[in-house]
Amino acid sequence: MSESMSEIIAGLLLFIQSQLGLFNPIEPPHIEFLQAVEIAEIACEQQCGDVKGWTPALSDTVYLNQDLRITQDIFDRSIILHELVHYVQYKYQLTNMPTDCLTWKAREAQAYQMQFLWLQDHHITSNWQGLHSAMQRIQYLQCPAADETVASL
Image (tube, rainbow, N blue to C red):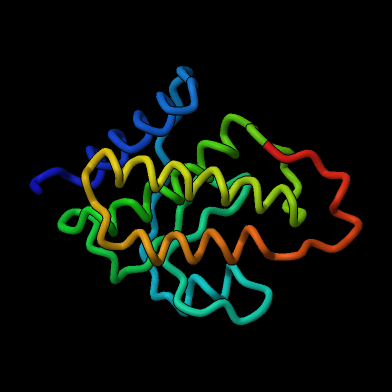
């Protein structure tokens, strides 16, 4: 793979926007590579393990684990796709901006669905079990009762 990072991001954003039927152009985010522990410090209220990426709401920055080999590894590239889905969700305001539990779950479900689609299009099936497990953990996560009236995607 000889694509540059900007070409990769542009291609992934086009894939996401076309899958979601969104055609207004958006500026690509700033990508910042950090150690997993640094991302966890800014992204997690509690300990959250090996963080691969994080996209904060209302930000033009996507944080990625510096160990990802996005230009060489197609599965690692799918991780940035997952984070770019969140970036697109925020830029197009596809969900309510609050980060309540049900809205977060809906955003994650859409990002994982898009990641699965993209990997399927690239004939990558070797890491699906890990993605499936992550998706199940999110699906079965119980939200506090106060969140139950929040509309999802």
